[in-house]
Image: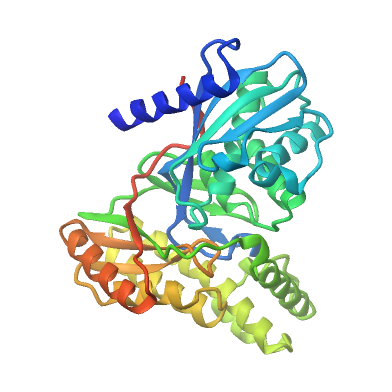
Length: 395
């Protein structure tokens, strides 16, 4: 708790320096990051995902203003200064830089009939590593939506908030992401992961009883930007593969197929690369369902094996890993006490997620850290993930 008090003190003093004290004591909100345990690149293919919210995340101090302007400041990006924008009719601008994410939420809420009555002064601080694939963008988007909903009394239900946050990233920022990140951030529940059907948005919580093991996140420390990566290209390849399959089978999404059903009609996809992309989407979806069943039957060992298979599919069929992520996963597989390890997030850089026996964590961090640094040329970072609730007002 001391850390939170220290952080709050630093945030409050910076807030008062920048924005003064006229608005009274600012309200404190927090929003988690997320890690996806299994089910990668299945969300926009109508499949299942199995993410959880984590205690690392984004915090905001918020005070109302009397006009229709908002001022945003990030303690993580002080050189960008205070960013001002109008609460009505805001459009995307390169000048807004990082603030396009929260500004996009304001615009999407306005377009959905929830226009703000006034602006805000907001100071953000995040302890999620930047560009690590732990969803700092979804964290700040959902945070902004929760702030507006709470402060302006819109009464929007949480799933709708999640959808508006995703819409901001798709339509305002220009990143064609699925709904998993915003859903995990908005709907997270302490000590649970969420089995989400991205086709129907039906979901259920599953208790993470890892039986003497913990989730360890390892950051490659190679920065990446999904907007400029091959993410949108992968999505287009899957859509093209789906169209080819629809000529032989009436399906709405790749996530509807069993592995056997896919194998029987895969030759209908003429492009071999697109066929591999679709195979990953189908197999990964079914792997996810099997993994959750295994976890709920207390078979953590099988869950780990399926995580490993997920990484191999992401490496070979989907081709979204890269040398840094592959090195981390392969090193993890060699360590005693590791049940499973895979890349998590969009790929190309970012993090792996591993299930590691608690007693083996110090050796895991040392061995993987040393060998990775020797091969890649710089060190990775490690975080033992604690599972958190979704975005909320703290005070």
